[in-house]
Image 1: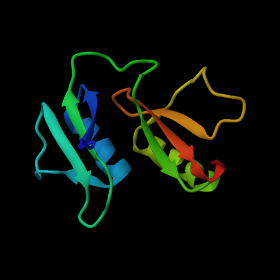
Image 2: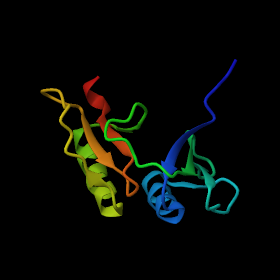
Image 3: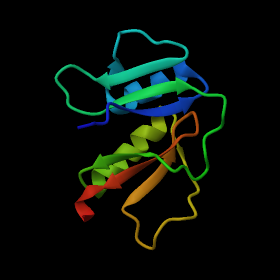
Length: 124
């Protein structure tokens, strides 16, 4: 049976992307080093979670990506706090024209332009 090993994001600036995602997720470079073309970030010791691989890319991030990350918050207060923390780390709000009437998610972009969502999971 197959399993997902890593989610991969394309990036222009590896150092900038590693800096953002290590602070955003608390992950660390899996092999202890950052490679300019491909770096895998893994949960820090003792933490569970999915690896995030960053791959050097020559193409720009998609405005409407077919694949993106959903980051879960426990409730609306945590969602708001996490959005503000991520903005402080260099994320940007996305002027998303596809929000439903009462969204449980906020669309952000990392410093490389990759879109991701912060979800209020209390509304399931």
